[in-house]
Structure formats: structure tokens, C-alpha cells
Image (cartoon, rainbow, N blue to C red):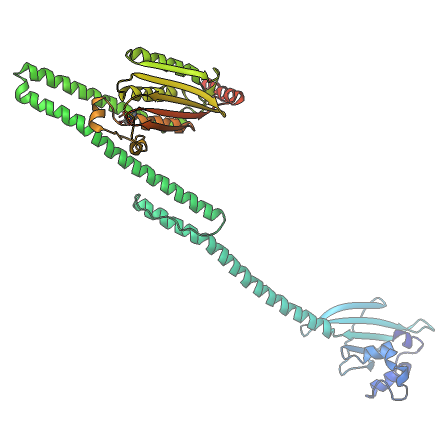
Length: 455
Ligand code: ADP
């Protein structure tokens, strides 16, 4: 448009501006179609100017130097305002819409003088509606995103909080009643919460186990202590009534009472041993013992005390330097319990065989006797606390039914096993096994233990 007006050398006026525009422009300005039937083939819309000023979005005004409109394509012409350079583009806001304003000075290409101004206001309907739609979509999407986010967050939080709430409820119930058997239900989810619930249930089971054990233990102990106390009380009553004057009763009752007191002492010692056997991993975590040494010592000592017995040791198949992880006092205690039982429950054949070998990295120790033997039914019970096959007879022999429980606790604490094989009337074989230590493992444990000793 600027180029079409440049040939005009005098000030721009309606009379010179309109002819300068193309015939089709004129037609548009006169309210006729831009393309006349006549020159349809020439397609007047090839004229950029026509297409732009016939666009309802674009308001064009041509001003003369006196700020008077000499040409405008719409009902309202864009306002003129002063500008310095030849050309200026700015984005202004009108009625809340962005309008792109273009200001252009028109200079005559003959004398270079300013002849007028062209002001173009582009309403940018497409841009504005695009922006409006974009804003609408963005608000819509944001609202949906916020709702979805809140929904997901709610589900996640509920998923985590619900199990915790349930755990807290269970903990509360167990706290109120430690014997309660309520547990956390299975959440059927393979994650940390399920793991926590499982550990929590295991912990409760274990705690319950300890409580039951303790109850049972207290019950057993009081039951076991009741007999010697009753015996002592009986003798003291007898002494009080008749014993003062009868030296025979006095003598007998004192002897029996002393014997019962001794038995009680022995029982208390065994109960302490049993309790201690449960805390081994805390007390002797690095103890290493050479098996043949302990076997030799224990067999010698027992043979010395029980001269009427033949106690044999066979360790030909056990390498002399075989070591296992156990505190040697405990291995001695286990062997003494087994040999002592062999002696206690012996019949005519007064022989005990102790043998050991190393097989498949395991140390096997066998204590064999030829005594009364144990029935199949009783073999599974003899490791229970206070269990005696024949209560009266065992009591006579000084047994409390604790020896094998102590031995079993000790053996399993050191990752070993204990088992019995017996035929009634023929004898029994008690077998214990322990994992053998490699040279490296033994060295490591000894090093650790000497470090702890130095501390
Ligand atoms: P106790 O101190 O009574 O011997 P134990 O726990 O050592 O307690 O043994 C439990 C019971 O197992 C014994 O009372 C006895 O009846 C039976 N028993 C243990 N060892 C033998 C054995 N070598 N021969 C026969 N019976 C045995």
C-alpha cells in the first residue's frame, strides 16, 4: 500500500489516494465484490492489498499530514498518534483484546517529503480466539489434573494409612491384653507395608511364645519345687511332734531334709543353666573349641568319678585339629549330661562308648550306652523341660528332667543338632552334630575374640 502511495508527491487526499489503489480496491470500497465477473480469471485476490483490506480483521486508515482520514476500510478508522521512526509496530489492548497496530509514514518517492500516514489495526481475531480457547483448555486441563492428582494422592495415602491404622489398632489391643491372639490381616500386597505387617505379626507371635514359655516355666518350676518343699516340711513336722525325743527319727528326718535341700539346690542350678543356654549368641559369639581335646578331658574325668564304669573313647576318624564354634565349657556340659544319663539309666552292662568323626564338614559325636533304653513314644518327649519317663525312679536317681533340655538348647544355639536312637531294654545312642570350622573361619573367630578380650 505504501508503495502505491509513494508516487503521490502532494499531500495525501481522498482524490489522489483512491485512484492510487487498484480498481478492485475501489470496487471493494464502493461496496461491490472484489472480483468482477469480467476479470475473474485474473483473480483480483492475487492483489495482497485487496485481500488484506477486505479482511474484516484488518482496519486500514490513511491519514494526511493534518491528521485527517483520507481513506478507511471499516466503520471505524484506527486512531492516529505521533511516532518518530518511519515505521512502528505495537501490540495494544482494546476491550480486553490484543490488537496489533502498525504505523507507517508515507513519503513521496519524487521529493522524499512526508505526504501522509498509513495506520493498520489488526484485530487478530484468530490469535485472540486461539488465546481464549487455549486459556479455556488450560484451565480445564488444570482442573482435571488437580482432581486426578487429588484422587491419586487420596488413594495412595489411604492405601498407606489404612494398614498403619490397622497395625496401630492391633498394637493397642495387644497392649491392653498381651495374651490376645489378634493379628494384622494379610493385605495381599507385595510391598514394604506387607513386610512390616508380617514382621509385626511374627514379633507378636514370638512375644506370645515367650509369654507362654514363661508361664509354663513358672508353672513347671513351682510344681517341681513343691515336692522337695513338701518333703522338707513333712520331716520338720515330724521332728516337731516326735523327733525331739526320738534320736532315730531326728537323725532320719535331718538326713532326708538335707537330701531334699541338696536336690533343690541342684534343681535351681539346672534351671539357671537352662535360662543361660538361651542367651549364648550374646555371650560367646566367637568361641572356638578343639573337639578332641574336650572329648578326651571329659571322658577322663567321668571315668575317674565312675570307676565302676568302662567309658571308652574312639576318635580315630576325627582329625585331631578339628574345631567347632562353641564355648568349650558348653561342649563339656553337653557331654557330661549325655554320659551322666548313660550312667544313670544303665542296667547290668556298665559301659559307655563315646565316639566322634568328621564327615562332610560336620563333626558327629555319639554317646552310646547299654542301659534301659527309651520307648519310641518317649524318644520325642525326653527333650521337653521336666519330662521324665518314670518320675519316681528318675527322682530316686537325682534327675529333674532338665538335662536333655539344657543339652538341646546349647546344641541348637551353636547351630548343631541332637537326636536319639534307642531300643528299650538294649540301650540308647545320643548323636550330636556341629558344623566344622574351616581353618580360615576358625582363625577369623579367634582373631575377633582376642580383639574383644583386649578391649
Ligand atoms: P534327667 O535329669 O531326669 O535325667 P533328662 O532331661 O536328662 O533329665 O532326661 C529326661 C528323661 O529321659 C529321663 O528322665 C529319662 O527317663 C530319659 N533318659 C535320658 N537319657 C536316657 C538314657 N541314656 N537312657 C534311658 N533313658 C534316658
